[in-house]
Amino acid sequence: MIEVFTTRPDTIFGASFVAIAPDHNLSKQLAETIKRR
Image 1 (tube, rainbow, N blue to C red):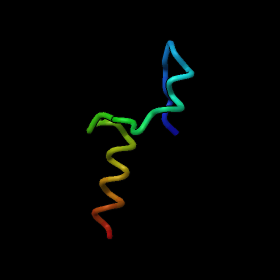
Image 2 (image 1 turned 135 degrees about the horizontal axis):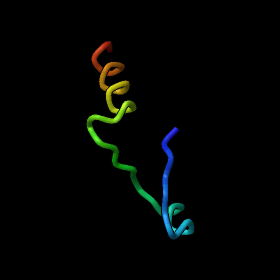
Image 3 (image 1 turned 90 degrees about the vertical axis):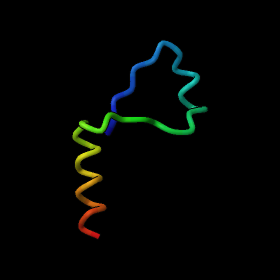
Image 4 (image 1 turned 120 degrees about the horizontal axis):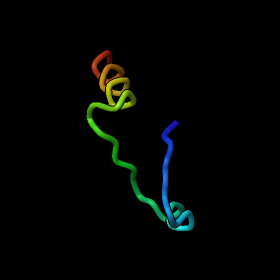
């Protein structure tokens, strides 16, 4: 789960993507999963 903070919650429904930092734990987990394939 990614926590998102915004001042305009109505705009989140139109979001096309979410960017996360390369050093975020989720990025590291995804990289490990992809590496194992």
